[in-house]
Amino acid sequence: MNVRQLILQKLRNQPSVRAAEVIKITGFSREYVNRFFRALVTEGKLNRLGKANQARYVLEGRKFKKVLVPITTHRKLANQDLREDVVLAEIEHSARALAGVPENVRRIMEYAFTEMLNNAIEHSRSREISVVINRQTASVGFEVTDRGIGIFNNIRQKRKLKGVLEAIQDLLKGKQTTAPRQHSGEGIFFTSKIADVLTIQSSGKKLIFNNVVGDIFIRDIRPARGTKVSFSIGVKSKRNLQKVFKNYSGEAYGFTKTRVGVKLYELSSEYISRSQARRIMSGLEKFKHVTLDFRGVKTVGQGFADEVFRVWQKNHPSITIEPKNMNDNVRFMTKRAQNE
Image (cartoon, rainbow, N blue to C red; front, side, top):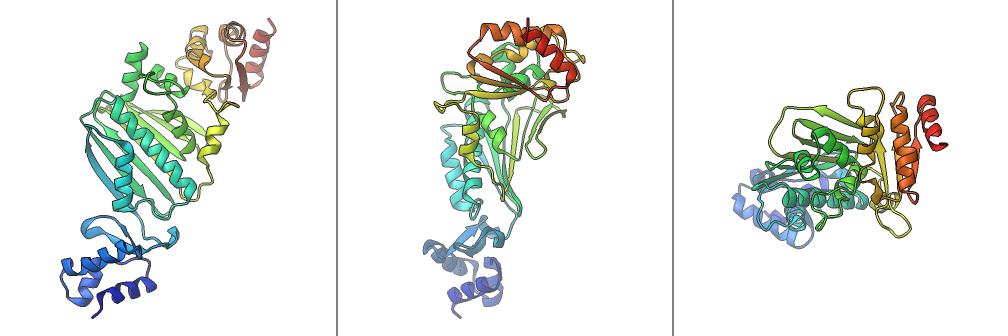
């Protein structure tokens, strides 16, 4: 029996084939059958999905919708001389987890995965990092988990902040980094914009960027050591990495724009104080255009409005502050401050 022809014949009638199916039909050993699969992969006729006995094979060039999913690829990595690009290349080569994914989604996945893994490598102080890439019928995503200092705790310590919530607030601005000589602070910011959903779990908090509903949430979770980052995007997403970069860049193609949701800074009162205004605006002098999103904010105090729209703006006249989603109460207070 010609094993090679049998494999190709089965793939003309079904989306994928496993070695076990061929072994059952032919009675040959797994090692013997795998020789034919390896040869067909080397010749570029087949793609391999998965590892070891769970591997599936599909015809090269077969469209994504015909690829049998889900695929889950897991790696435990020693955090020593680790390179994020090498890790991704190895996973793509061996597991083919991104095979057939549209180019725009592939680029987004590659950017997000390498940025988040690099953060864990260089900031977590964790000896081991776990990564998972998940391929589903309608989506693709990954998880990066470490058992280090924790991202929010690291920001809190380095920026000398009072607590985890202030660290989250600082992170949300973008262009914030605990290692300014090595990093621009753009990785998490842009990753949060290109995901369908990005979650960051650390220090008893879960920060959720949900671009499907267009909102950001913070939830309490059971405290655990380290940080877990989860990313997902639909395989039919029309999102484009370069367009996202452009949306937050000026004419010189630098990262010059940011958007801050004021509601996230309302910790204990309906009114947002002058001190909270200072906390919000801290670090935003790095940008040329700042959008303040007041969605969900019922009103603001006079001190807050004065601090942002008169004091801070006077000290940074070259920076544009663009308030959005204000109700009548907030609009009245901001206009009053701007006219003084």
